[in-house]
Length: 104
Image (cartoon, rainbow, N blue to C red; front, top):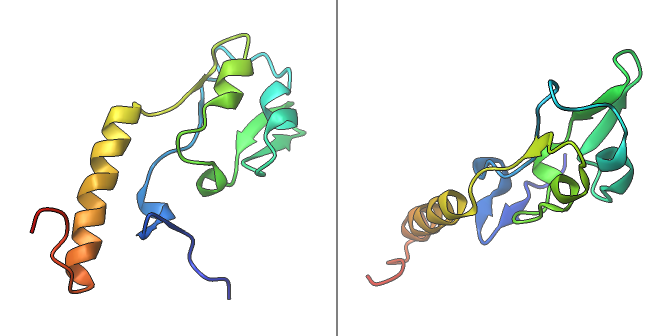
């Protein structure tokens, strides 16, 4: 069994940072699929388009696949919202581990 991935002491699965594909805009060019070195995407042969299959392999803060998409079909959460969430989760996990967390 593999060990759970952490980001700044937070289980990675609690941080919803990963690409979302708007299939109304996606033309199936494959740029995102071919570009991402982290295995976030797989290619759906039947529908001839990329699919996000490993969302938590996405590097938090990375938007590179969205930048190379000429159709603007890939979006991410707002960085400010994710940063606020990470701050709250870090405080939560610091308290659970017996720490006082920032400012406490």
